Length: 479
Image (cartoon, rainbow, N blue to C red; front, top):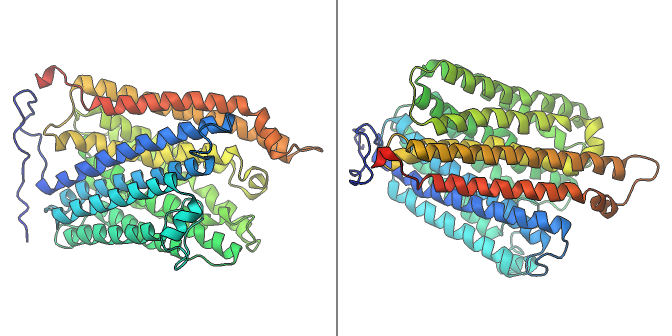
């Protein structure tokens, strides 16, 4: 068994001095660094393809036939999933050793897993862009085990198998670390979420011929990820950072965490029914889906209260102000995006008119950013300085990082508002009235909002570039 003695980073260079306390508790936590770097790099790619899609909404033949809209959308959504998974894995490799009070079981396995996942992901994106999707399916054995062709699960069968192997390697590494070390509530919730993520992904291999069954179990991956086990991961990550930056009692955090997670599972699992309204399932899913998905904003509101309560009752002033800002922002934006905007169209009578419109897209954008992108950046903001030998980035660097926070967050709020306005008009013109317009006629009339959304997307991209730049800025403290 590896000793749990504190392992420090190599000494900082003369031009980049760090305080003596700025050190990792366990040297193996440093394996999180390449995962976080890859996550941010893939995040940039996701936003680039999002901007490309935004232009294709208003300039239909932009970059056609080189990058058709369906390919750009596949790349955009797949990069979203993959970069968040890299972020979750990096967070797991960072916080599990510290919570378990021992070194990671196998840092070498963690690095090997990183390269396998990165190369497999890159080859998949290259495949989307370089050959027709049907050709890619033939090349990767989809005829032997058909799994392709479904939204968000477009990955070739070989890639899906690779994801399972990567997940098993990752979970083995973390589970062995936990089994030999201290057990905490944060560890328990984090591991429950990560194991759930892996288990529910297995339903991506189930591809029944019946379309109703297909969509029914498809949501077991998509919904039970993003509105189930991913929320456990988010809660564990947020709790870990709040303990570190506020110094509040672990017992207080654990009570909040257990209540939030209980509400998440109760509402999220049965709340899957709000996806079953109009796909051919029994009608009892309409009241079940409506009632329990209406409860889903509660755990997000509790998470917001939890974050602000922790900061207000803090016992220390942590020098990493940027990480505190990201943590508070996660609570607020996840409540607005996943909670409020989710509730706006989750009741069956309303969803009858709104499903599949830009209202759905408005909810999706703010929810993913607020709940998951922001919590990953919270973890990066807190841990990356420590992995570089300092407790926090310089004041100048943090000012720039906080500018990036506001640029991205305000831009996402406007993206959501513009898409909401577009969706309301779309419902009115396309699905209501005596003479509803055809789909494309309605789209042409709301193009103004798509241009506004594209402008907000450019601001978001600027904010992301500023975020990356903040890690390269030195202040007087570093001189």
